[in-house]
Length: 349
Image (tube, rainbow, N blue to C red; front, side, top):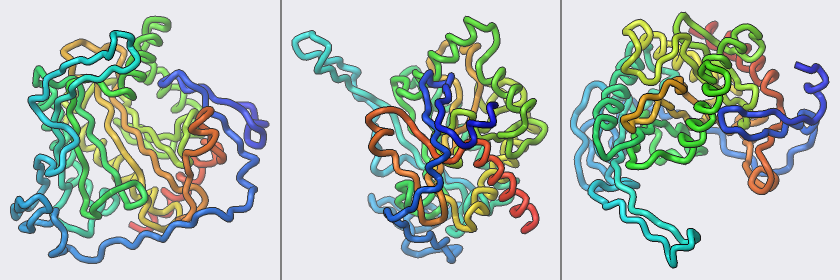
């Protein structure tokens, strides 16, 4: 990469979304007099009698969470989607300007652990492996349904990312249609495979491994890196070393390695600013639309908002909303900071 790009404004192309990202490293010197967040305080109780996700407690919707001892899955009491909604299409005056369609699906909650005070960063790798297995069960169960085209599994960690409860948990939203982000990624990967004869993310993984400067962690089955085109300050992508389209294609050893790399990434985050690191994390398996997807490579995205410290975050406003995505610190400097934080995390074990 051109060394001048460490100090000067430039654009980077994101082939996965086929859009440009503006990088402005000189802006890291600007003074900050904007909003300062409250430092997150991690839960101190293993069991919180007021938490509706803790074992045995009543939930807000009136149901009672059973006294579970491992992972626990239930249908969201306040689901964004409902089953049995007909896919009726409405196009006012048939002009393609006021178009709506019924969308069916289901939303589930996955409690990672019965302990209220844990996060993926603090959980044992064996317990994270149990979460990986539950993710796979959900992908297979929901993805096999004729009325489901995509199963999106994600975690919002921290109040800054909209998490309504600090208990370690994630969500599953399964939809009749393919969501926007997936449709964009699928189109880009199909186009790349057609033009180059290899899957986009497989080719990209090999380039990043060879370069090394944006890789933050790896094991025999997975590599974690800051994407060349990253938007969020400490954004991370996790890619498999062997191409698979979903978890059900992974061997037992690969699932172990996925659990291990998740532990590394999340515990590394917590060491960047020595605070519980907020993020939105999501799995991107291939669509469950009944089609083959030779273009697709399974991957995970981590989108954390913190920018300069535990209390200064990145806001997607102004030019980002009206023009195009923009970032200040370069992906390479973010990767260096994450590698240093990872070393501190390992020393703390």
